[in-house]
Length: 288
Image (tube, rainbow, N blue to C red):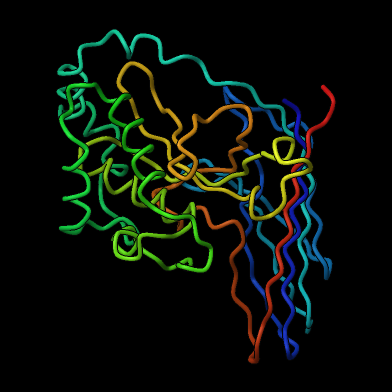
């Protein structure tokens, strides 16, 4: 599937600000499931930009606007080709007890230690432990257990953009019983790590426009999900917001331990007064 993505972020400031230092992580990854063919970034006011890869291999663009300004706008335009991921293959044939045993062994711990530790957003609590234990036995294997976890989160919690904010933690979702994709992903991360399954937070886009009679707007398009490591199958994607497999409708921007590592746009500036943020994301399908 070939997709065109337009992403516009605009800050308006009540009073002029200066020395605005920013980082953006809005460049789609290129991997076995997707290829980024075109990608452009423009900044107003105009500013020089440099790029680098962060610790997780995500492409980062950084820039600074020193002169006084009352508006900052960043536009990206991208063309990405996606495809369905490879089948799980050998993982389904591997005995479940061997899968779980491998995850508890030294090889897994050495390779994935950072993806097994709690973070600020995924710190453990008695409620998270109880929710994880309620999923039942592990005899269905790692992949089956992850699919069950993803489906249970989607079924038990209500999607509500007004219920939480970017600072909400996984334990808070269990209290509020409603939230957004970021919250659902953080809860799944916490449960995976509690069970010894390496898991990482993914930021990207989800295209559903042709299923709803048009393009995918901001609420539909900007998305977060989870990648968890399945023995013999590698990293597999799971969407606990929609309980659907990660396929050609998903475009990955990058991954990290939690939301903090893959914030699409972040920065600091010198100035006071109120600011307004306006984000518009549109994803449309192109002819192959």
